[in-house]
Length: 370
Image 1: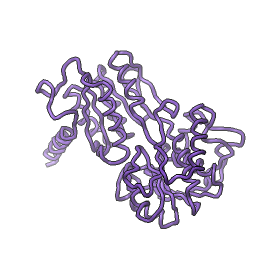
Image 2: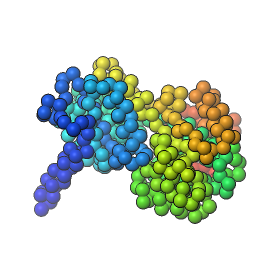
Image 3: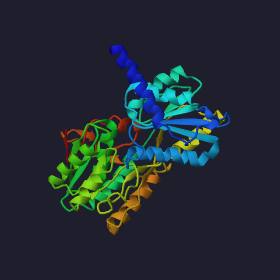
Image 4: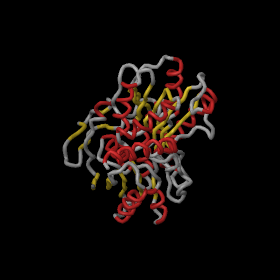
């Protein structure tokens, strides 16, 4: 029975991977493989590409690659690929069998599966978003200084709130999330010293029902501006229903809840993907750990809506120019964590990537709830 179940699960995963692949209604050459002069690229997504957030942002980058390279590139993708080693490998191998020579995993938990595949397929190239593993030959990673755009969106929140209480829906108490929480709060604090913030962890990267429940909890606590590190737009919808405000994430989804949406820190994945894929095709790629910024065009801020005050718009414009010029570090002391410990002394600034990514706390003024 166990043997039968294992075989069934493998077949189910393979069928799921095939069903999730895109790139055209017909397979080139009638055999699932692109012509020899076409580079096939596979993208693995943790959720659906229509989630209104994280996965949609990733897929927008993939489609920008397709548009940039035209017929010389074929893009495949698989949705709902779990952060599970076997699920990653099964979906990726399905793409490789269909001609993919570049495979890109877009969620942290895709990392280990891609690492194994990089060793097993030394002639192919593997890229990974948000992880830290790489090698010297065919496996690199990429991410970005989202703290820059988070800070700017915090300025908007700090100048919009009337209760001086902000709400943050967070996936996990993981470093990437903590950096976002703290930078958003510092942006708000820079223009509103009376502001505080409550954080609710949902222990999922993306679950619309959990995100909505967390948003409703924060709204009940008198938080009148919400933001999130979670994959969907549920928080914006919940805020709109009660006349509150929301800062989105990942993409400009202002049309989803126009009565609440202020702005959003957003990704421009094509700013990394297009030049790196060009290097791979040319045989010039050297694995790296890329960390894009607003100055690179990899990190951005969605246009501020009409709900944002002129004062906030002017301050965002001023600070954004300073950030892009490299003159505005985000984490400047004195800073204390919410247990009262000094984490950045007065007169110092935390600017090195390795120092920022050692963050394991939330700042003073933030209340975090599991």
